[in-house]
Image (tube, rainbow, N blue to C red; front, side, top):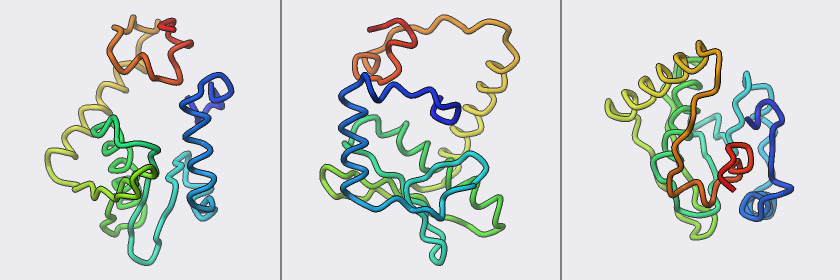
Length: 144
């Protein structure tokens, strides 16, 4: 959604708070610009570590999958093995994200699901889940 400039930050306090935390925690890493649509928050090019900043420690698996995805794509693009670290801004903790078989299988399955979605002519109905209450895209889905 963000890649296509669909952004509800102006309507959603949680996204606005996260944006403020990002802006005041670290300067934006401009070396991430032009990475074929990827937008990780920070990259250590010399140590091959990609960092993704999160305002809070919630949605652990989704956050880890996002950071792992960046590391996998950078590994493929550079031919070198990258590490992934999710940085929790509210607690200043770093969570390493292992790129083990389980995580890679999860990413592979997600890519297969995306491929199926891309082939559909209509947007499928989404079930409301507990995370919907805090999602910045809830107005888009109709669960506001």
